[in-house]
Length: 480
Image (cartoon, rainbow, N blue to C red):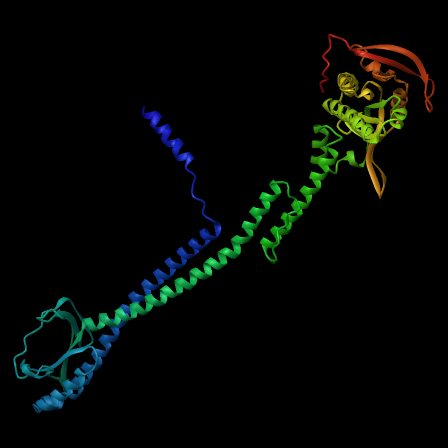
């Protein structure tokens, strides 16, 4: 039961497709994430440094006040001029961030204070919170007032001729420092958000600019897959994406060329020949090659007289029926249709893909053709039972032959002429072969020898045989 549940869970997980996220959105999110993290870390570092800088700045400001008071309070403190001391205190207290200031003589009596109620009162030592720091003659530490207000207290001795006359203290508001930091933090946060927002806009723009070509290429790939090889990618870019678009267009042109070649040439050759041609378009088959092959000619007896007395539409219809059967049976045995010549068919076996048993394939194609033509005669097409076939084997030359204006792939050779002659010799539904073909298939072929024939261009007589069929002990399906 547990295994079944696990299999069900795995199946359900596999069936749930992952959400599709466009590449421009992925690039935008990645860019924005990097930007936000970078700006965020930088802002944090800057704010921490700013916090320390503000504290140092306030301490320096307090030290300036201390120095001012210590320098100007010496004489008034010696003469016990309370009025002058308080004027000094009030001048310092008016500076931003100063919470209080007071002067204590060496007897511990407050001689001047921003709070007039504490003047001439004994000074109670302040209780530090945390560490007490020193910087030169200045001592500073944090502590809290009775009402809970946090204060940074700075103190400095008043010295005259190496004699301590008293002490000056300045209290700086910690809240004032925090408010300054908060203001700086708000400004920096605002600036950071604006930078991130602008960065997002730039990231989206750049991502769209770089992802749009991929969307176009995906569309182009879909069109190519549908067979629309004329689809072109229009990208005016002087970068790698522009180069990719040009390469894609060249690929489409090449696929179109191969498609047309396959569609056109594939109507005349078998699949193995076509695959060989498409895999090696520059192979020697295109330039010319010499090899053994078997040639088949099939021609309709009495076609000229028939065509003169029959409507053209009917002639074409019945002629196409003959060509359809002939082409199919030829290609089923691995041959290819070299050409249609009027009412005749020229087929080749063993070229451009060499077949060791091309004679047997050729004869089997002829037998199958006559059998199918005989069966198709019942449809009323009397032409189909009037086909004679001639077959000859030998060495031929195959290749692209013609002129720069008109080219065709064909074969030439003595056996081509012999096959044409034997086709003319064959009667309706007969198959006539030459001696070379008969000798190659002597053990498997049942044939009747006919009167040797004199063929123009050949020395001596040509052995001629009429095919009856393959012997029953031999399979009718040739093997390569």
